[in-house]
Amino acid sequence: MEIERKFEIGGFPKGLPLLEEAMMRQGYLCTAPAVRIRSTEREGKISYMLCIKGAGTLVREEIETPITADVFLNIEKMIGLPLVNKEYRAYALPGGEKLEVSLVDEGEPTEFMYAEVEFASEEEAKAFAPPAFLGRELTELPGSSMSAYWNRKTALAAAKRDPRREEV
Image (cartoon, rainbow, N blue to C red):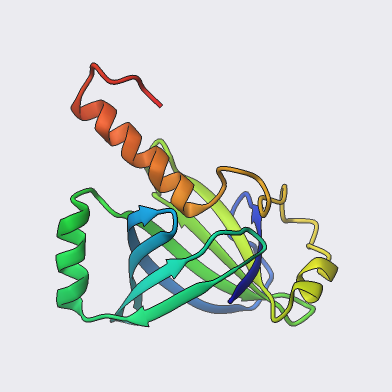
């Protein structure tokens, strides 16, 4: 089970203790339910994960299972599109929560940043008072998930391949 709130953020926060950094690549086999692969590079080591996410926003079912590099590469070939790139950093918030911030597709016209905070319970999530530096809450906003971003990105790629298609 995943319980998290998502926010806009204008940059990596300053003055918070940095817990970890990673570079990630992820792509989707389908988006309803979300079935994705992700590679995560931390301190020179790469791990690979298959993730399935159910419907929902604040609370949703999530299954993650490690996969091998070969399985990841074979699925990446099936996807057949460039994967999403993420620069990821996690910070400790003063209340003990972990703030996860991602810079998505840096340098591309679709570049954006977002922040997430995961919780142990729905009650804890609802009671959380976000710090002032976090922007608009995106948790319940349609189209703000990474799978929705993937759908927009793949539609743009398809439109570039076939100019007769309407742009998204």
